[in-house]
Length: 178
Image (cartoon, helix red, strand yellow):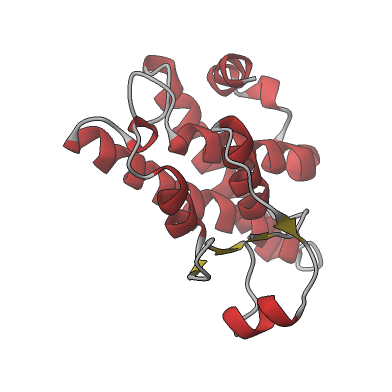
């Protein structure tokens, strides 16, 4: 069972991963007794395996679902790059987007958060200038996570950071991923 929250990019990513890899999973968006007893922090996404083993944290859930496949990379270096980019998306890009949303009332903090988000978007755009995919020569789990997170960034923040068309290499990559 996947305990999910529809508005969370992390939950959307895990649901998209299941769909892309044809993994049949029950999705639960309620906070019921099963969720509360297995996940005391009540953070989503969370995954309860068929043998009732609780798994929390997005990367751990993704690894449990497809970690033994090439979707996490074929070589040691590709796997390292997948983890590097996954960490960048989770720790930097997602965090920066949340800071923009959280600081709309404070113009100075908002300006700082927007500048950081733009710096990260330009860095990503520059990466795609010479790379077809984010971490390898083929699509990996890092691409899917980036696709979901950037989709949310542009959905919620385009009025502050610009439309995806302002980042032509990201836009080209979006078309590849769609």
